[in-house]
Image 1 (cartoon, rainbow, N blue to C red):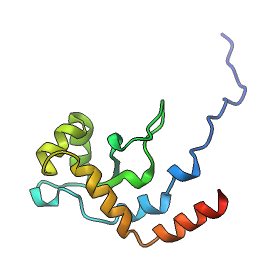
Image 2 (cartoon, one colour):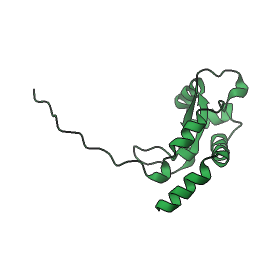
Image 3 (cartoon, helix red, strand yellow):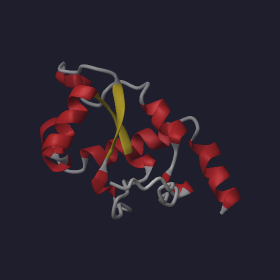
Length: 121
């Protein structure tokens, strides 16, 4: 058997306008969006609201469309999908999208991130 030892081809890096690692880190320090249920368990994780748009083949939406969910609720969201999750936990249609937009607007690093993006572009 022959083993291919050549380095694998790397995919293109994520575009700068989709990547905000500081925001994701900040989100992980927030309480779960579903804390009102009393069922939260595990640390908060950044959950990307995939119906926000800008999603491509093999890529997720921009980091600005993420919300904090504990491990328990994040697993439910993946299992049931955003439509069912929004209806059950976030008071109906587009609850995740509205929450993501609010978190993005109050993130302390947003202005600096947007300024840096504009300087590069």
